[in-house]
Amino acid sequence: MKADVLLGLQWGDEGKGKVVDVLTPEYDIIARFQGGPNAGHTLEFSNIKQVLHTIPSGIFRKNKINVIGNGVVIDPIIFKKEIESLREKGFDLSGNLYISKKAHLILPTHLLLDKASEESKGKTKIGSTLKGIGPAYRDKTGREGLRVGDILTGFVEKYRCRTENHKNLLSSYYHREYREALEIHEKEWFEGIDVLKSFRLIDSEVFINQMLDEGKTVLAEGAQGTLLDIDFGSYPFVTSSNTICAGACTGLGLPPGKIGKVLGVFKAYCTRVGSGPFPTELKDETGDLIRDAGREFGSTTGRPRRCGWLDLVALKFSIMLNGVTELIMMKADVLDRFETLKVCVAYETGGVVSETFPFEIEDDLKPVYVDLPGWHTSLTDIRNSGDFPGNLKKYIRFIEEETGIPVTIASVGPNRNQTIIL
Image (cartoon, rainbow, N blue to C red; front, side, top):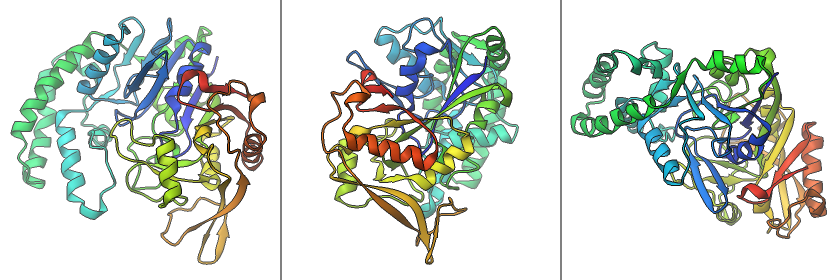
């Protein structure tokens, strides 16, 4: 068996969690492979709305194993709150949530360092969610991190040793007073460590490969989006991990030859949270209308998302990087109210038109648009693709022709049952 991979193709917030929830019945195991609790995967079904930050989005389906892989960084406080929220709704995860021993921990001092670093940048800040994710990954690559497996033996001593350097940085380099905030944070953090200990801690790379060899089906779930990838995104306005398909190999211990289908999720338009270039951004009433209709506010931070038209230059770049085999289009219903839709098919800068995603997106870059007719009718009650209005079918067909990849799912609303297989 091969593991299928599902990931985002834009700047995150594409609706990956909802799609994972819909597809989970087809799989035995759902495994999250990278990112931290800055991710917010929102799921809605049966009058329940739940935002998941660390736990894989297959958790609401019975008899499915969910794995937090080694590529994820975990904040024990957020993890504890997530578990408590789910238990309050009647979901017991004790038997079907496994956690990699090699996943790294976000320490309380990582959050303090994240805030101090972002504030020190002034106008050049990158728009961090201040969840401590960047400092945690920095310690991972600097070989100074703490992993989930470390909590099993001699953990307090390891923790004190690791945080001493952070304290020196906060006081000597950033000139911050940290003691009171750290003391309050540490108490809840160690309570979260106790919650982590109550789950099955595994060598996830061995487990997942064994399951594949035994004929089990696996879906690897990504967080954030391709254009936030640490190597290939709009650097430095990116996240701290590899969000592309290759991240599933390093984040779960999967050999490249064991990757099957690659499912790329994108919105029928574009959004972005925080700072960074955004060629098709609409800083006008149209952008506001898309934001309001799509409820485009961060599920983790609550920040309003920047909104714009669909960018096919960026989308084709993401498809190339990931080897996407199927496209999944989300939030088509948000565009219900428009008579005309614009789609970016090229960039113009300095009088030169290009369809190639550039090394750096400069301020003078302008999107080149084509106009497509809108469907101008509500999609939210449609449950069969045969009932799609003609202009929506044309919109989907245009995307397929431009990218060369089939659109196999289209979403027409936030609920599980508003996800239409094409």
